[in-house]
Image 1 (spheres, rainbow, N blue to C red):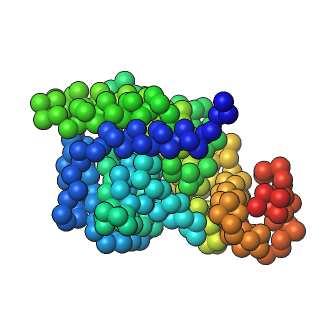
Image 2: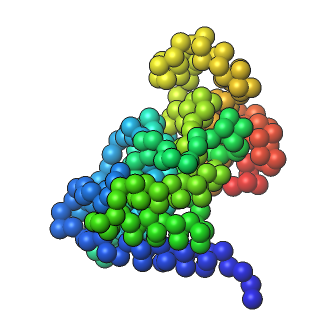
Image 3: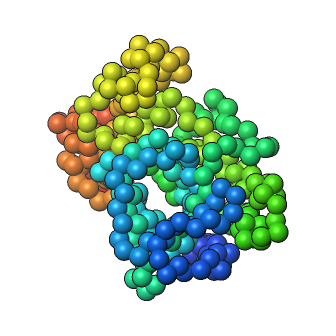
Length: 286
């Protein structure tokens, strides 16, 4: 029998949604506490949040409708059944779109203000593993869906102690520890923070001084710390813009539009840099 990843993903999404079938469809929008550090959020009309910044990293699940997260000019739609991670301190445009059938949008959100006991922050070596800013959706696995189901059972049980709930959430985080899309839940290196900032507006004329000001650092301190981590500012800037161009091509934008997003007026210069970064030309990639 031929293995069908898309079919497997649909099956896992359906299994995940079964764990949350009891979350009531509120007659009005707003937040509702679902357990320690967890709450559901609903809205009845299309809602846009501009430059929203999370105080803490957020692990979330879209329960009904669609969430679109925009990083710069690139949008990432996430339908019901998507598990996602959002970083702290990054200006994101967020669009919550109600489901056409039920008439409302709903998600479950868990703020990861502190890592639970037994879940260590990422080491510097682990944090260097490839992870493109903007890849918000976390791939589903059978183990992850089962762990989320266990956490949900504890969260909805009024008799469950807060410590048990935190233990279940810790199990979920341990499974996500080496998942690149979940990295913002654990630790963001300084180069990661710079990449996220640049990706929020890749066509802006970023300078060391501007980035440092946004991050609350001195320009010389930012330069020095990036060099110490082996990632000079110009290299991080180019990498972030190339990732923005790559994301644009994946969403069907033209090579010219992708070049502009990466800050290149010359398409031939852009094509050379793109090949250096990804091993293929923008035309072949798109």
